[in-house]
Image 1 (cartoon, rainbow, N blue to C red):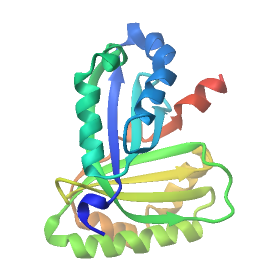
Image 2 (image 1 turned 60 degrees about the vertical axis):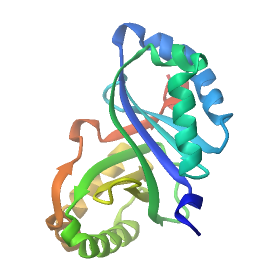
Image 3 (image 1 turned 30 degrees about the vertical axis):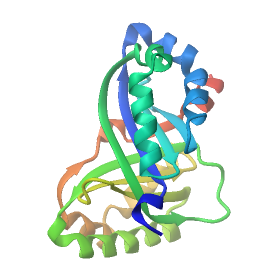
Length: 216
């Protein structure tokens, strides 16, 4: 498989204008449908930060990098999408990424919670980092109650920019798992290979936007 044929995952993390928040939610389903109708779109989901309804994460999967870039260009230039951007306040993080690892636990409940970790790994420790990362998430899959899956990504443009997207059955189980695993030797070893940690501690947990609003 050539690089251009790999699926690309797009992360867009942004804030909303408080005054225009309801306008965003009113137009959201139309926006999602417009995105999903673009050539090469395979998946598109939106998540809301658990403790701040003004912070949003869009997570899209595209057929390849070319499709993702063409879609970005259309979204930014076509008037069809202009009204969807008006309620946005600031784009905090935008990155196209490749999936490099997945750790999936069988026979778990439907995931209701997503945890986003963004960090920069030390390029000189890359091999060691990835080895410890795999060992740590195998340990999570084995020991953590409520763990559903982890998807690990690396940036298309910069191999030092990484994302781990962790799915949990509930926030309580996620918190309990962190207490259990913080002293795990593979986790400590993984952290030693990281030069700059960019975990938004207050923004770690997200709920699927539609489910959260439907649940009131």
